[in-house]
Image (cartoon, rainbow, N blue to C red):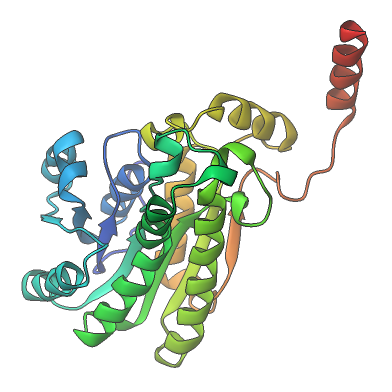
Length: 278
């Protein structure tokens, strides 16, 4: 992580962070980085996640209030925005780090998706961003010049079979970010997605075949996979005033994976592997 003393990049700024579960989660590490840089913020997650996670510890460490919210329910999102405004006033940044697929959890193949669960995947993992921004606007919670970041994955552009319907959800998430970004631009509000490399979080590790996805990306990316703390530092810059004109972008934070072809070492390893099989 960057200098633990911080640079004061978020001094005087307030925000809300959705999706922190435990100390391994990216949202948790982003919260710590935001605190380091001088921000105040609230934490929110679904009631079931609050029971399963350890968010109270993060609250104590950062001084952040916790607001339970089921983002699939519009009335709860609206009520959350009202509570945030009551306690914090208007805010400057929002982190959307929400993702869940019942189909993946239940080992449903993509061809055999449960469609009710599919709707839940899209609703919780992508449409929730639309709801959050809709009610943030309606309740006048977000300051002009603010910044919104949603965490994505390259599965939005490329198919990773084990990522199943989450490939679709991330594609929708990125589209919503662009759509809302175009509409909030007149207020100087930026909306971006960060496409993070496979990261060893509790949620990521729950995906069957995750270890293979992680190793593949780590070997192919010229710089290797960035950590959750690396991602946190990057997100801090997007919340800061240093990126005032960056919006409607899907920003790859993956050690160069998205642009890499294949290097000589990997070619030799693959050649050896298939030679051994023969």
